[in-house]
Image (cartoon, rainbow, N blue to C red):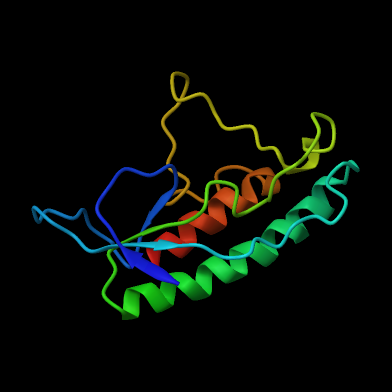
Length: 133
C-alpha cells in the first residue's frame, strides 16, 4: 500500500533518480508491509543467516520500489526496521549489525562505490542499488 505524503522520515530511497531533484516539489510514497521476521529473534544467528533473512525483505523492497516508480513516486519511505525486523536481544542482533566507516576518517558513498568494502555491508549496498534503479 502506498500513501502520497510530504514529510521527514527515517529511511528514504530516491526512486529511479540518477541526478538530484531540483524542483521545489516532489512526489513521495510511504510503503508498509508485513516484515518477514526472524521467528527466533532471541537466538543468535551467523552473519550469513542474517544476510539471507535480510535479503528476503530487500527483495520486497526492490519490487515495491519499481512499482512506486511506475506510479510516479520520486521518493519512497520504508519502515524503520523493515529490513531486519525487531525484538532482538543485545546478543541476538549481532549477526545483523554492520560497521559503517567513520565519515570523519574517509569519504565513501555506498551507492557510487558499492565494491569498496566486503560483504559485511551487503544490505547497505543492495539498498543503494535499489535506489539507483
